[in-house]
Length: 525
Image (cartoon, rainbow, N blue to C red; front, side, top):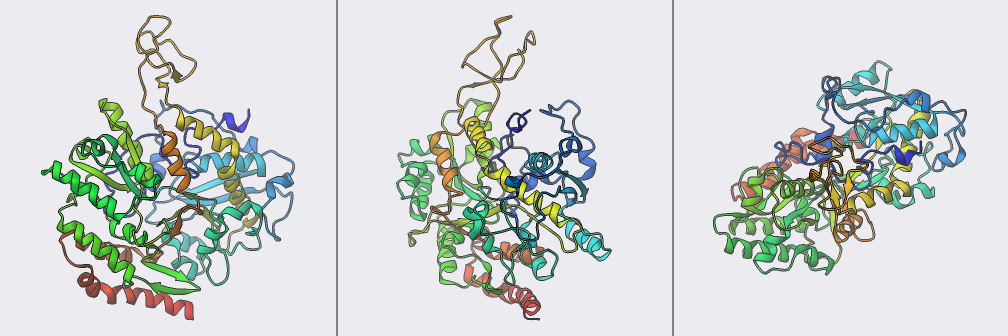
C-alpha cells in the first residue's frame, strides 16, 4: 500500500496546522496561550488505554514489520550532518511525551514514515504535560535520558541555558537544501552559537481574527478578507468595523478576546515581549512600540469593545453576541463552520491574520513552529536525528501537501458513508449535493467537513510564507509559569479593568527583571 493511501484526515496538521475534526472542548482557552493542538494532545496514559472501541481506524499499522528494511536509502538522508552514519537503520528511539506518538497526529504519520524510510520504531513514556520537565530531569540524572521530545515553548530558553538538550549542528546540516526555507527560523532558536532545535515546519496555529461574512455585509463595511488582499487590513480598519457594528448592536460587544490579546497585538509591531538575541535576554516591554500597541488597546477599552469573560467560538451563544473572535486560527475557523453547519445559518465563516500595525510596511505576526529536540545524554542520537529528518520529509512531501489541499478545497456534498435508513454502504463520503440512496431513496445524511474557499487557502499559504510575514517569537514562556502569569496580568489589565499599561508595568517590572536577571547570570556564568 502506498503511503498516500494510508494518510489520515489530519495528515497536514503541522504543515497547514488546521483542525479538521471540529471544535472539541475549548473552555480553558482565553486565559493562557495554549493552542488547540496542545489541547488535543493533552492526553494521559490512562486516557490512551481507554480509546473508544467503536472509533474508525483507517489502517492498523505494524511498525516493527514496516521497519524491517536492510539499509536506509541515501536520498532519505539528505539534510544529515557529518556525525550521521549513512545507511544505518534508526533502530528504537525512546520518546518522553504527554501523548502516544502512535495515536496523535502528526506523530503517528511521521512514525510510519520513520519506520518505512529509516527502519526505526518509537517507544513512548507518557507523563502529564505539567510533569514532563521534572521527569526529564529525573531521567537525565539517572543516566536514562530519552532520545526525543516534542519541542514546547516553555523549553526555550530556560532548558537550553540549563544544558538539557543536545546541539544538533553535527547531526543535521542547516545549510542543506532540505532546511533552506526554514533556516532563518532555525537561527531564531540559536543559543551559545549552536542549534539545538530544527523545527520541521512553521505552523498557522497562532492567533487571527475569525468572523461571519454576513455580519460585515449587514453593516455595509468592507470584508476583512477583502481588506487583507488589498493591503488595508490594519488596526484602524479593525477598529472602524467594530465601532460600526457596535452602533448597530448596542447591547452586544464586537470582540471576544483571549488572555494573550495584548501580546498578540504588540507583536504586530515587530516587537516581542522578551527575546534572546546574541545570547542577551532583552526585555522589550518598555519599548515605544509596546506602549503604542497597548495605548491602542486602552482606547478600545474606553470604546467598550471587549466582551468581558470567556466567550469561545465553540459556543453558539458566543456567535450571536459578538462580531470578531481573536483566537487560534486552526481552532476558531472549524468551530464557526461546524456551528453554522449544525444550525443551517447564512453567511460564511472566515479567518484573517491579526490586523497590521498601520505605522509599519511590514506584516508581522507571532510565529509558531513544530519539531523535536534531543535531550542531553540521549543513547540513540542517530535515531533521533532520523526521526527529525522523517518529520521534515513529512512536512514537505508534495504528494501529501496536494492531497490535503484538495480535500480542504472540496465543496461538494459530504455525507456519512451509510444510508441512515437501510444502511446501504456508499463508496465514498463524497457525492452530489442532494444525493439519495439507490436502494431505498432516502436522502443521504450530510456530514460536516472543514472547507476552504480558494481565498481562505491563500491566506493560510501566506501565513507560512516568510516573504509575506515576518515572524515574531517571544520567549517569555520559557522562563516559567510565574513569568507567563505576570505578563498575562500586565497585558490584560487595560482590557479587564481599564488600568493603564504604564501603571501596571511599573508595578510588575521588578518581578519580570528579577526572573530575567537570574537567567542572565546563568548565561554569564
